[in-house]
Amino acid sequence: MSEQQANNPLHGITLEQIVKSLLEHYAWEGLGERIKIRCFNSDPSVKSSLKFLRKTPWARKKVEDLYLATQKNVWKR
Figure 1 (spheres, rainbow, N blue to C red):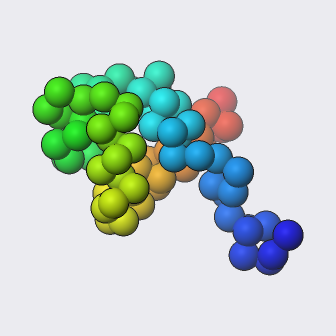
Figure 2 (cartoon, one colour):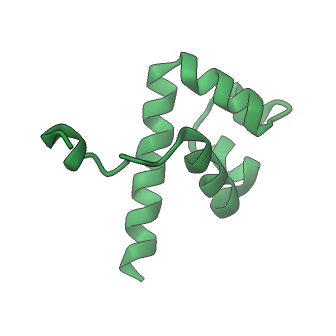
């Protein structure tokens, strides 16, 4: 395992797992409020969100950052 991956908290977690986890926690409405992107606010679906996020690095980064922050808060409990 490379040093870079050893320090990556998202290593082994798929984008689909991240989106589904955030959906369980926030639902579409909550995601749309936190991250202002159309795929969360206009006729949202996991499939369309994944398609958009895979093509749009800045949006994917926001989703990953929200996931990490959410997990950090869950682990504190």
